[in-house]
Image (cartoon, rainbow, N blue to C red; front, side, top):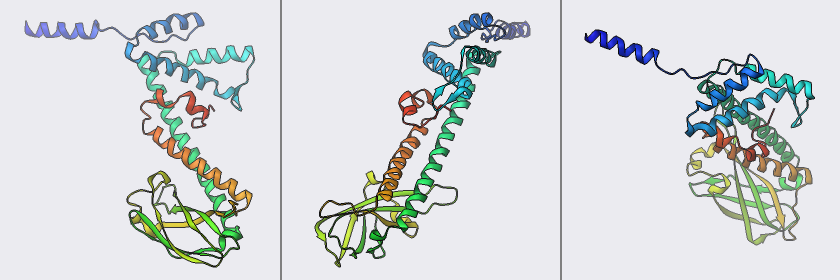
Length: 287
């Protein structure tokens, strides 16, 4: 009797369980009726995520028609793309649709990170090349620096013809294997201008807002400091225009890269990551 009751319960659980509706992409008519059923089966708490997922898959189906951010297609191509999209969902329930989009979004986020790293490395290479060709900055001589957990100290000699009021340093932390070089920034504001020929020992606070961390002093052998910008008493920036542009480009990319890494920490929540604002910022190219 107990065995019969157990079998009855199993049959009820397996046979009576409601199957999730699936998309039927055979024809436009079957697609419309079936997608309505699939949408109705989505739990209320994830309706927004499902609608977002459908939008992502729709956009993915159009990416071959995107050129310079604009969708290029006539009525015939639009009809063809719509049919292909509907057929691509054939046989999927809402859970499978979400799983597919999850894969798409994780791949897209990883691609965004790789693209930014490549751009950042290119910008850094250009900056270093221009820095090596910058004759004025080469005349500002620094001694070997010392770094504690809070400050950098060094001696600076002004070999230029300008009285200096401000210096900007780029700190390059040599990467470990398979890592992107990380950068830091530091500035010196001279209360009393550093006149031509003068030598002065200076200390620079290591500030978190400029990328420094509390453990950077442990990596002293791997940190290179180079002067990338200088101002004189007339507020004149004594570097050439191309170098200034390259420096500004690198700084902007570096800030965006840091922001992107923050976004990627929440890649499970791609609804709040892949937003219009972040697309406009260029984090996630449409194509």
